[in-house]
Image 1: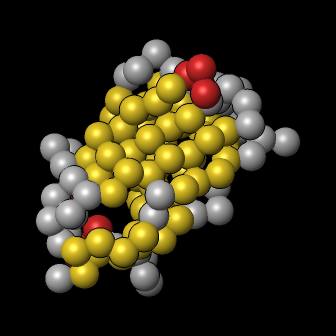
Image 2: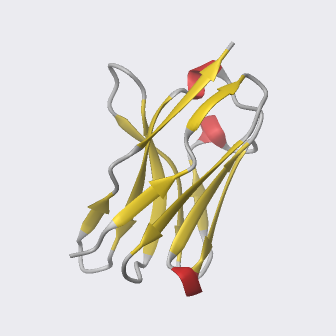
Length: 113
């Protein structure tokens, strides 16, 4: 069973930065981050393949940067210029090409105005 363990969430003022990390217990083809704001559905922030191909949702493009260290089976999300509307629980996501998805427990990010 694959485990995804997130870290790095917290409380930050608007305009600040945070870096999320997610360590996987096994190699995963696609890793990424989703955000779930209070009362809303989970939505994709960004994904990255093991070859480094990235995909961002427009809301976060230019402010957030996804990266990964394949040797450590770890994906990162550098979040800059944070806004109160970025608040939510951020979930680490993993996808294998044979159709299996994995989720982390989530880490809370709160941006105060």
